[in-house]
Length: 219
Image (cartoon, rainbow, N blue to C red; front, side, top):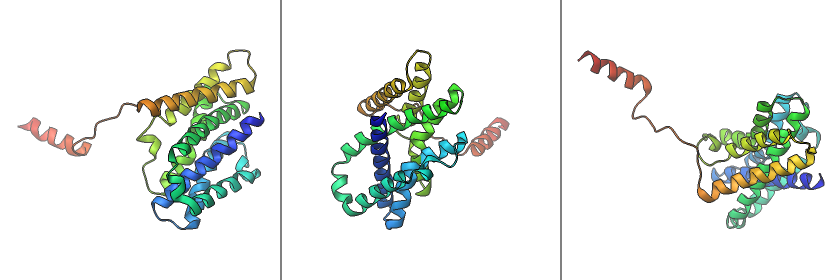
């Protein structure tokens, strides 16, 4: 499980860096960079813990996670151009972080007696909650709702963890398999540019469409 902890730290750092870059996009000051880094790095885990009743949240008990996020913010503040040139590596670390967070979220939800659907949801929230907070703080539509097979990969990872529970496997093995499965799904989605089906944009608001329909019906 030591490897899981190391991957957890690496994922937290990668998420924090991605959050810090969102602050750079909007030319925020160093405080803004730090806030978005922390929100992205530990936000999902904090939401999960609050929903499960695991209080205080782990990130507030183990200050190491906050320090990791602040380290990510400092790195971006000092070397944003250099990191941007190696963005592909960060995206690879982000995919690993997504997979680790999904597996850890599912395992913690199960430990708190959650039902299968909730376990899968906690996997998704742990992996994606921080990104949602980051986007809302920067006044953007959450990216997981518009692009990429991101939240879906975490959700499928959560269901994989539940499925593996039907076999006589240790929690550690289930976590590692879930990480590998989620990572595979995310990588395949990136490689083949997979996205969920979308609703085509309407040419007008629903009320306007209904009004025109009524008027045409009278003619």
